[in-house]
Amino acid sequence: MSDSGRPRPGGLADRLAAVQRGITAAVAAAGRDPEEVTTIVVTKFQPVSLLEELAALGVRDFGESRHQEAQGKAAALQDPGLTWHFVGQVQGKKARQVRAYADVIHSVDRTSLVDALGSDESVVDCFVQVNLTDDPARGGVAPGELHGLVEHVLDTAGVRLLGLMAVAPIGAEPRRAFARVRELGETVQQLAPHARYLSMGMSADYAEAISEGATHLRIGTAITGNRPVSG
Ligand SMILES: *Cc1c(COP(=O)(O)O)cnc(C)c1O
Image 1 (cartoon, protein in one colour):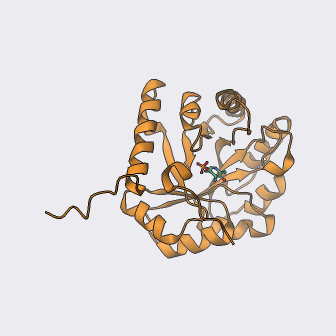
Image 2 (cartoon, helix red, strand yellow):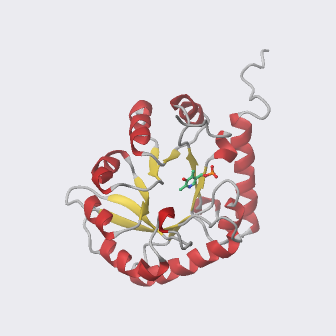
């Protein structure tokens, strides 16, 4: 029998399996139910062929952060069984186009964007992104402005709030950062009990995120390998 169909050691299937084992172990260590945790493979800068390989390996949730690239990939894969997550900053004037292919937008961070995403015809799921740094360029709403933004989402037709999204600040203890997001999420649930999801945890810190209640992991390079340099 030929073994050409076997995964290449260190290849994509191996990396995916290794991360899935890591997630399973962290979920068990936290005493959580694996059904609560969705793994999104972040494929920004990666070619369509890599997304096709991942889909063939059973990946159903893809994360992208650049509008044109994401739009092209969603059109190229044309698989209604896939869920597209937009995790990058959304330009107001591109909001309606992002909404057309994205099932979930993880980066809602200002009222003008909520207005641009609103609709009387369809509903898009979204996370409000919280900025845990003092640098506004990193995206996300400042914790002090979170409740105002959440109320605006709740008052807007066509956007359904799932919960909060965050990136652990560089150099900070990730578990602390994720605990803060969990606590902020608890305050949001007082306004919106259904908004109980937390999008947090990347390649380097998903185990800590799982310990603090992450429900949506956004994992790129640990699965895909390094990103090709763009341009
Ligand atoms: C790129 C990206 C990720 C994935 O990062 P890795 O370190 O490659 O796992 C997750 N979230 C966001 C918002 C990203 O831009």
